[in-house]
Image 1: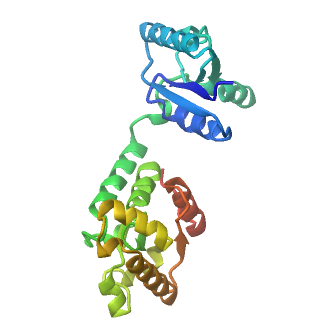
Image 2: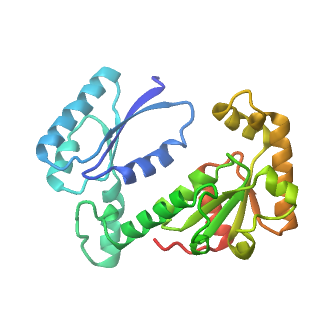
Image 3: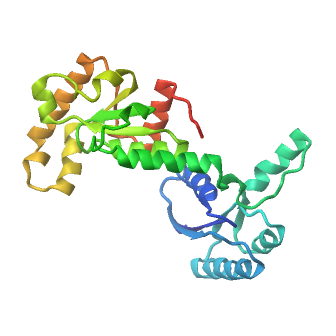
Length: 271
């Protein structure tokens, strides 16, 4: 059996929904390598026919049917793709039909509804701008407007988590690094003291921190294991001393970090 399978993610919009759900499902199948192909903005019959040809050509070349995860809404487009020599998984059809039956209302079948621009989009973009402007303690102005402030040593995952919380949920997230000067003073940076209730710590195992820092600054004291061990130890000590909750993110994805923070803090998602 061929352990490489081609997977198509197709949509009449961005395809983010198809990819996210498809990736989650495929992650359950170990030992198989998936060759992923994205076909977004499939919103005309001509584009659908081109995609159909591509899928069928892939089926012949691979000697086995590709997998197709679809969130196509337009019936004319979907009907063409359904003719492909592939396992066609219509993600919307799986859920929309039973929902229509349960709610007693027909769905709008509007293209792009799940990613439509509007208040939610603007909220997320405002939050992204806030996260970028308050990254690594660069700007302390308006820090009080943060919904949450992530603290921890440099390169422990504060920035990607801040941006993820902003982009996905519209949460104003600032992040502030704990540096040797803070450890020497034995107390939190002055800008953070009035905002104690908003603080959430992140920590990481020194060995992993060394790997990350070495990619950025090889052969430096900054990346030395001994220095990483000392900074992590001092940061955790400070957070315990200040009664700040912290999370070990060594083996966690950004999605897991964000979800855990939301769950543990009870922070409401504006979006």
